[in-house]
Each structure stands twice: as structure tokens, then as C-alpha cells.
Image (cartoon, rainbow, N blue to C red; front, side, top):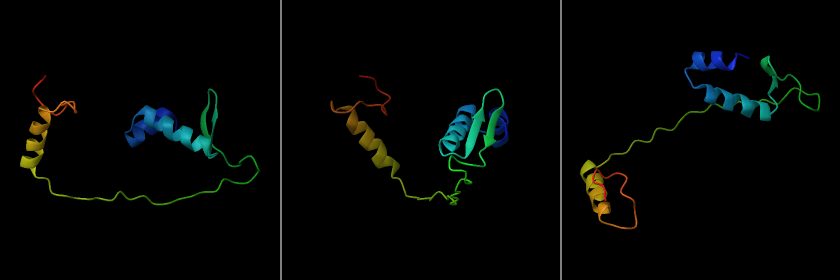
Length: 94
């Protein structure tokens, strides 16, 4: 496996994201970490069999919807006067 830094640079993602992915793969028995050496593909699981691969393509579902900006602004401005919500979208502090 590429080092954490190499994978981070290659895929243009953070080191934290790579570490999370490697730890997830390790928890599933697909990788093993070796101190001072890095991560390696685990060719055998605890039972001596090659790990089962579940490869499912993932495609994000794009859902488009129209947004009425005027209604959104009006809703935000109306929420300023209520005490049951913190007006995080309001430019006016309390």
C-alpha cells in the first residue's frame, strides 16, 4: 500500500482521511499495519482464507431542486424575532 502521505498527495485528500480509510480497511481485515513499516494488504484472514471482497460501485445520486431565494430570505428574517431558535443565518446579533 502507498504510505499515508503518498496516498494523501496522490488522491489530493487529507492525511486524516487516508488514516481513517486505512483504519477502516484494517478493521475489516483487509489491511494490516506494521509498526515503523506502514500498511500492507492482508492476504489471509484469521481463518486462513483470503478476505471476501465486496465491491459495489457507488454513484452519488444527484437531486436537483429549485430554490426560491426570496422565500428563503424571508424565512430567515422571520426567525430572527423568535426565541426558540438561534439566528445563525442572521447578520443581526441579538
